View 1 (tube, rainbow, N blue to C red):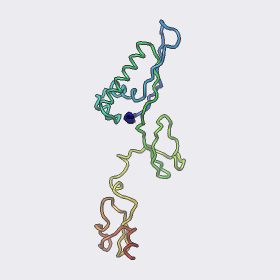
View 2: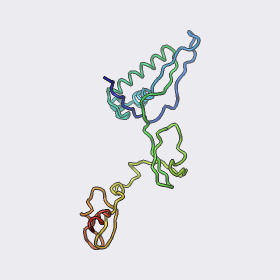
View 3: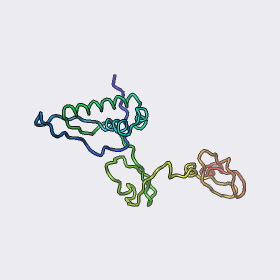
Length: 194
C-alpha cells in the first residue's frame, strides 16, 4: 500500500535568508555538518514563534490541519536545537510548498496574472510585455455588479434592444426597458425562428 500523498503547504513569503552558519567553534576544526530546514518548517517557526500565532491559527495560514502543523513545528524545533547544540550549519530550502502569490493587473491589455515565483520581481505583462502593471486585489478592486455579469447578452425580440446578461437571472424574466416585452438570450434567437 502506498503512503498518502503529501498536501502542499501554503507559504506567505520566501525566507529572506537561505541559512545560518556557526562561528567561533573552538572544539572542532573543519566541517561540523549541515541541518536542512524545509521552507514549511521555517514558516511554522515564523508563524508560531515570531508572529505568536497559536497552532490552530498557524495551520489555517498554511492551509493544513492543526496536527500536521504540530508535527512540522516539532520537527523544525528539533532541527534548530541540533544545529545550535552541535554547531551545525542551517540551510533553509525544499519541501512541498506553494507561495501565496500576489496578483497583478496590466493596464494596457487588461490581463490578470500572478507571480508564483516570489523571488523574481515582475517587470512586464506576460501577455503584451507592457510595463504598465499594478498590484491587483480581487476582493477590493472588482465592483459587485460586474461580478454578476457574464459575456452573454439578453435581447428583446420586439425592438432588438440588447443588455448584458445578469448571472443567475434567467433572460426570460428580464423586461425590456424600452418596449416592456420579455427578453431572451441572444444566441437562442435563431433557434426560435426556425
